[in-house]
Length: 395
Image (cartoon, rainbow, N blue to C red; front, side, top):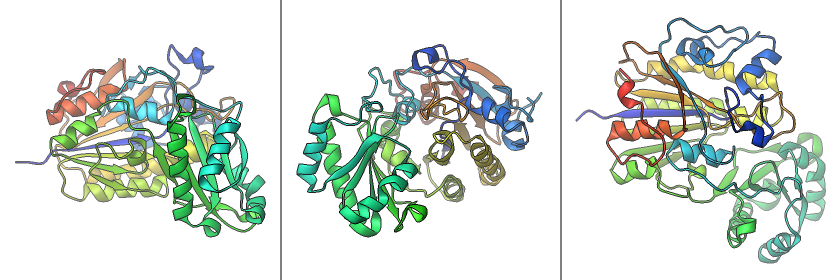
């Protein structure tokens, strides 16, 4: 029996234009890919993604659409309520989110939550407001070294983040505290944030503090069975790279690899393509979102996309004849937009295989779950309740 292999690579936050619900989120007009290249005056080139049809999905200054692509290309609308990481990834794999995740962006966390966190962990906490992770470390990191108070903060996402000096506390203690925070936040619906995130850092003063690669997310379980669960149950390999394992809270995963950067995550995907497996390799490349989108840095975002584009030929070279590669996103994060939040956008899907004869546009479809449905149909496992497979259209 010949192994089947599918690769799903999420370029985190690479939206391709707002959808009809964007106005509900204050995002009407957002376009991560288009605005990024407009802001950088079209000087960055992405020839490999361009050839796959990415620039046929929205105007990408300096990178015109192609008459003939080497991949199928389409846009997907989000069915779920929200625009965050978990909502997007869960929907890709077939789970619909109907209730928005709780956030504390404008208020910080309730004092009784902080009191309970201090009581159970034995630590005092400072901060408790929405902030950039790098900035709050600069602001409060030196105080932490003096007083040994941990830093708690949030963002526009449904998250509670704990920043702690790795050399002061040690990773075991930081992770212990975050596990307690997960239990506390899960104990009451009004506190149930999607993720608790450990944010270890090193350094001894504001100008040399640096976050380490030892981030760890403590997420909620997906709200239903995913295509990953179905594939694992059927005996297939489900390999996660980057923060996929955290996003799905280990559910449906058979092998997990962490990444310290998007470049490393792409290399890990290439290395996986050189191995024998039977199933799916699911990769998240987080730097696009965490380093550039949230920080509203169009130049950094575009340069990261160029690095990804330059790595693509090596991944393609290591694909077998019947392997299928999906390149997609999970939401938008327009680096020219107001604030620091994600943006509600459609996502691109580029579908490549060496076996395809006449790839073309597949238009616009109604759910991110069309990806999961297509994967499920190929592997003959139970299809998700949302999303329509386009697998049989791939020829």
